[in-house]
Length: 441
Image 1 (tube, rainbow, N blue to C red):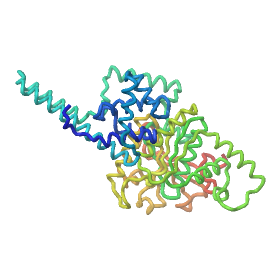
Image 2: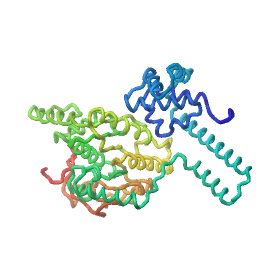
Image 3: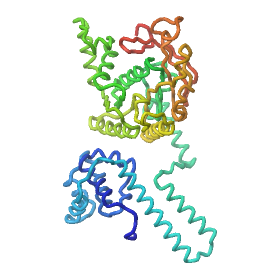
Image 4: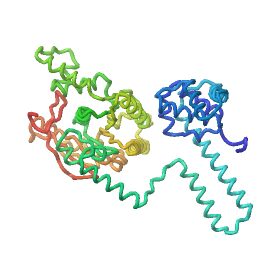
């Protein structure tokens, strides 16, 4: 390549150095860039070695990366110089995503330049079949546009046997290909479990959508399956206390407040604490995160669970309107749609169900006595489009005198894999924030 190729020495150094400051930044970087996006060959080698060390040792330091470079065939002096040369400037984790974007843009420009130069050189040779040459040139330019995407084209000869294998596994009860059971029999029967991709539990404010999601967390984790929860609404102590209240069937406000606890109840509360603290649940309550940042945190939680010998089965993002959509106080449908699509694409790529509690729009609140509808999600059209399943919580006795206290409905509003427009009957105990399928469960 020419010395006049577009690249930034400082940006490449910042990204290489950032991984030595905080190795977790590699999770974020790999969402955007690969070693081939670096221009300097030493920077390519250093980043490739960092990824190899991180995937194997789950930590990064200079001696480990130098040893990896030597393992890959670099002489010891060259290996050390590669890393030391990459650290002429101290790296930083600030503006990480911006630096990744710059790196990708410059890498793409170099690809365009190289492709155009090759096409121009071949055109100067006056090819015999000009039409075929033009078609070839067009194809190479399309490759430039598609270079950062992975082809998902699959022939029938490959796809059908894979589909049959999945069917066999499903009939044998293999959980790896079945929907994730939530522990609520009616919901699981209607949905066939939570599907890989985006699953929504929606509701008006105060109608128990987050409570239902947390019970699903407890039920899934109770099967020794790892769960990651991000809560942008409550701090960590309140999330754990909600789980304890539902487990002990004790009033949440009484646990979190000053009111005295009857000595006879303490044993039940203590037993609940033992049960909850043993569950494979990873919790993050840092407010103001973007959808992309939450997905990166989920990847870190997956790695932490794997270190404990557990597998991540479910991600809960509570809730959609607490994510940072980059709106700056103003409604921006495009940015909310982008957040939704990122979550849905990430979930499908990871082969995981993501459960997303979501508030209905304001129009739904004006029809309080009516059952929620799917179009009540239209504050963000991508939610309705991207979701595999949508269920809602409707505390019926809040909205009509014809119902008994505790009567709750869970309508199935969307289900790509099963029954539609089913309304399930539940009981909701407000003080303990607990749903049940029978009044005295």
